[in-house]
Amino acid sequence: MVVKVVSKKFDIPDYHKLEVAQKNGAYSSIEKLFTMKPDEVTEEVCKSGLRGKGGGGAACGPKWKLMPKDDPRPAYLIVNGDESEPGTFKDRQIFQYDPHLLIEGIICSSYAINAHHAYIYIRGEYKFFSDRVDEAIQEAYAAGIIGDSVMGHDYKMEITVHRGAGAYICGEKSALIESLEGKRGHPRLKPHGKECEWFFDNPATVNNVETIATVPFIVENGYEAYTAYGTEKSPGTMLFAMSGPVKNPGVYELAFGNKMIDFLNEVGGGMRDGKKLKAIIPGGSSCPILTAKEVESAVLDYESMWDVGSTLGTGGMIVIDEDTCMVEAAKNLIEFYHHESCGQCTPCREGCGWIDDILAKILAGEGSKKDIDTILDVCVSLNGKTICVFAPAVKDIIQSMVQKFPQEFEAYFKN
Image 1 (spheres, rainbow, N blue to C red):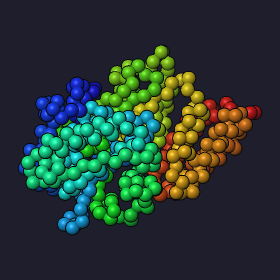
Image 2: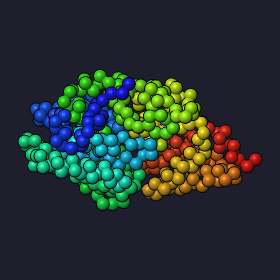
Image 3: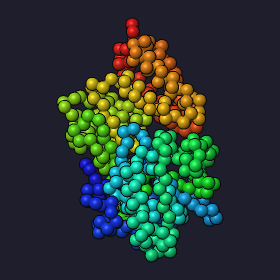
Image 4: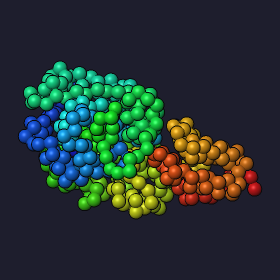
């Protein structure tokens, strides 16, 4: 069930060091890269069906095509390594075990969009991982892999690591760019039509760490090697993180299309201490929750997850056992989102706090059926009435918990 595309070198000791990485094939895609034209690289990625692995699942190649042609302004690649979604801890595996794969992916991706400077935005709490990436970048500069000439080729490549200040909202790409520009991390209004992002009014593309780290495999082996994994509509692989009361928690790379229950039992080793499965939040804490019964039919690809009423998100599976109180779990999550709302939009700023207060009231034994109706009403106000998807995501998880486990909320009512 487990496959190795991005993670194939994770188990090699000291692979984060350039000397070890080069002995084991690091940067092997670069020679082929420079025999291709930038548009050919983009087309290969389009044919591979590579999708963004940071939560949205948007197609990567078509996103690159939004970069303007023959624009005199400099272009930028921005790598989103904020990874602040609860339950998600896959990108840091790349930072820790194979940072040179990320650098190789940055070279390939930058060449495709004609960018000569890339920024890696890493969440503020990731000090160890940020230092490791910095060390790899310095090794790459010293070895002539990046800099004025990429491995002897007439192509300049600069890479800068930027650490965030610990704001969850900066995982949203436009808020990330605002932060990168030195401003408060507030999401931007979306344009009417499809276009690239803008960094200091220069064209830019934002991609997730794992997405960029997948590109060298496609460049070196061709799109057919990538589409050999997964499903027709969700080709390839993904790093899935599994946490909670399971025997083998961790990060595992799987092809899309595997059944969630098989992943839980065969790779995760099943539930720990004889516990029964109660629910799974499938792709980080902002995805609609799935009951144990729904998990049995859930398949790990984008389309199948939509069919069961949830989303694949970041692939960060939070496993919940029979002893977990869903009201307490909902309160735990809403406290996080209440704290992390940037406050720019009234429905989100006020709605998250309102739900937080109501859940506290219910847990104190002072709630009633009317409070549940109010929570669901606030969820309507959160959905589609704000600048970014933060509020709709909060709606997804809270509404699904209330609707699928109503008896647990009712058990706290004083009457």
